[in-house]
Amino acid sequence: MPMPAGKKDEDKSGIQPAAALADSLRSEKFAYLPSMDARLLLVVTPVLLAASWAVFHIGRAAVGQLQLMLKRARA
Image 1: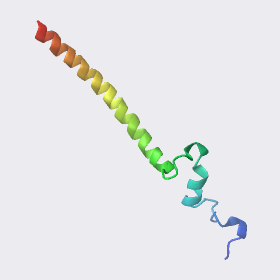
Image 2 (image 1 turned 90 degrees about the horizontal axis):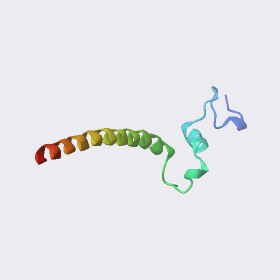
Image 3 (image 1 turned 30 degrees about the horizontal axis):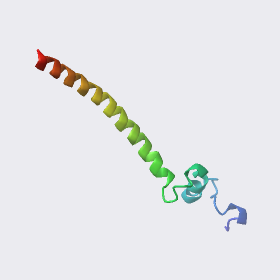
Image 4 (image 1 turned 135 degrees about the horizontal axis):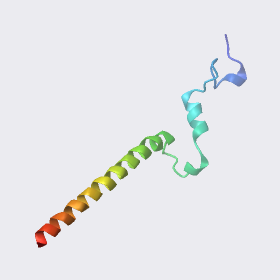
């Protein structure tokens, strides 16, 4: 059964193909990054958040240990 002309980008369930969905999700604020895909941003953002959280907490413990070591070295 041929699909109607207006329904090219959707199948019978009403779900858009991935390319059409990706085009619809792009916003103008990322227009200055033409080669960057929004999916990359969706993957990198949580990874950077997790890494910064780990650096903050591990760094805080490392600074505490360094201060303790310097305090003991003076005594």
